[in-house]
Image 1 (cartoon, rainbow, N blue to C red):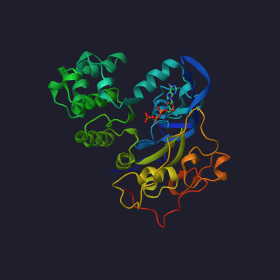
Image 2: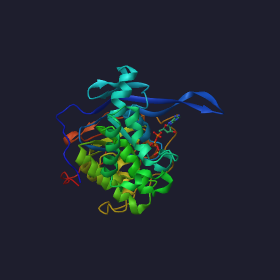
Image 3: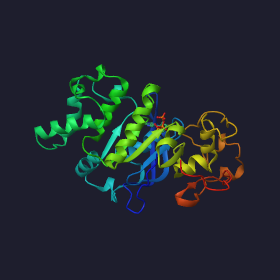
Image 4: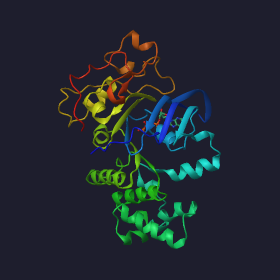
Amino acid sequence: MTTPEDTTMEPLVRLDRVHVRHRARSGGLLRRDAVHALTDASLEVRRGEILGLVGESGCGKSTLARVVTGLQRPTEGQVHFKGQDLWRMPAGERRSRFGAGVGVVFQDPSTALNPRLSVRRILRDPLDVHQRGGRAERERRVEELLDLVGLPGHTLEALPGQLSGGQRQRVAIARALALEPELIVADEPTSALDVSVRAQILNLLVDLRSRLGLSMVFISHDVQTVRYLADRIAVLYLGRVVEEGRAAQVSGASRHPYTEALLSATPSLLERPERIVLHGPVPSATRPPSGCPFRTRCWKADDACATAFPEASGGPDGHRWHCVHPQPAPAQTPAPV
Ligand SMILES: Nc1ncnc2c1ncn2[C@@H]1O[C@H](COP(=O)(O)OP(=O)(O)OP(=O)(O)O)[C@@H](O)[C@H]1O
């Protein structure tokens, strides 16, 4: 499933110590305390790779996706796109270069597509906005896009409501590809779909990545799906990247207890002897615990975990984790999945 990404070149996107804090509201008033949606996140999306982001609800996956797509300006830290600081570019340049360079696929195609527009109009819209070619050229591109995602020609005249969920998600993917982006960010693209069509959409994304040489950020709370699809995985907990590495390392030789707990909840990973049950919900992002944010639910936590967020520890090939009491290293590195 995996293809080797190019690690020698400048990454397509690089996040350096990114923080995102939202001002919380209660009763319509802005509160003094902030929601720590993302804390000190450093990460890169390499050319040609699928980077999977996993974590429970509220851990910051969508916030990270919004930062990567340039929709969310970090409170602190830098976002580099092909080596250029995104938020130092003039706004017009950022919109035209980055807006065209990144395509986004959302969770629910029913709400992401305008129900009053035909598929033809939906696909032509980004081409019109960015003035790509003449009229005939745009029409040709619309047909090409439909073909790329495996939909028949007559779909062009349909409204989103006349299509199945899987077909609508194909249209959303085609729209994300319209401006020939180098990066696709897919935020839970299959979770609103019937189980029967999920695999088809995942296979389409993988196929498009190799045919078009795309990079992809794939977000899911389902570690099993991410493991199947991604070249590398970053695990998020309460706004922090707690573990990152190649998919085989993170899923087969995880070192962070949180990753281990996520993996143990996946029924098909039979090699894991027992399910680790995490007690209680993810703590509030308004007042995250001091030190390691996972310590309040971690079975290994002690006083050492309460002092500071653990420094990164590193393994082979870019594998890193932030834990004072990591899982033991496996006897040998597992073969790639
Ligand atoms: N605009 C906002 N204002 C206030 N808080 C926000 C805002 N957007 C996100 N948050 C908070 O930031 C934290 C991270 O949210 P985010 O949506 O990034 O998590 P997630 O992992 O994508 O969750 P899910 O899987 O449920 O979509 C959460 O505590 C969320 O409530």
